[in-house]
Image 1 (cartoon, rainbow, N blue to C red):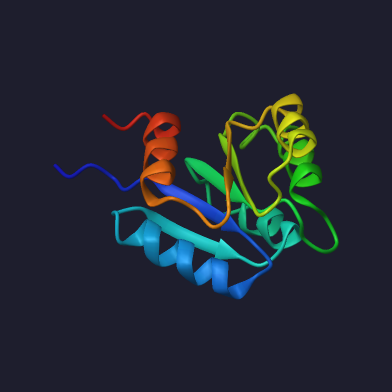
Image 2 (cartoon, helix red, strand yellow):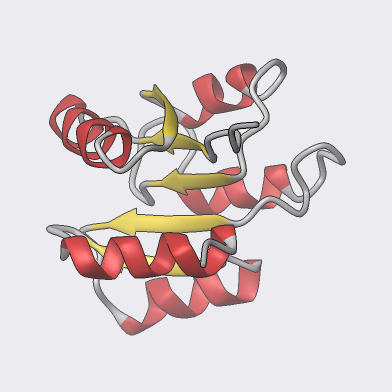
Amino acid sequence: MSIPKKQILVVDDEPTWIKVLHYFLESRGYDVQSVGSANEALTALRSYHPDLILTDVRMPEMNGFDLLAKLRTIPEVSRTPVVFFSAIDDYDARKTARELGAADYIVKPFDQDEVSSVLHKHLRIP
C-alpha cells in the first residue's frame, strides 16, 4: 500500500515564483496545485484540500494576511497550516503573520534546506 502524497497549495501572483516553487515541491514528491491570487485559492479550496498552504504576502485584490484571516473562518481549512513565502523580510510582517496564526514565514529568495525543514515540520514528515 502506497502512502498518499502530501498536498500543497501554492498561492503567488508572480508566475516565475509559481514555476520555481511548483518544480521544487513536485521534485520532492509533493502533489502541488498553484494559483495566481488569493481569490483563485479560495475557489480552488472548494475541491482541493491541501495539507499545507504556501502563500505570498503581497498580492493584488487580497493580500496573504487577508487570505489567512479568511481561511480561518472556513471549517474545512481552518486548521490547515499556512506558511508565508514572501520578499518582505521585516519585523512587522513576521509579527502580523504570527498574530494571524501562520505556521511559518519563509523569505524569498529561499534556501532549499529551510523550505524542506519547514515543510517536514508542519506536514509531520519524519
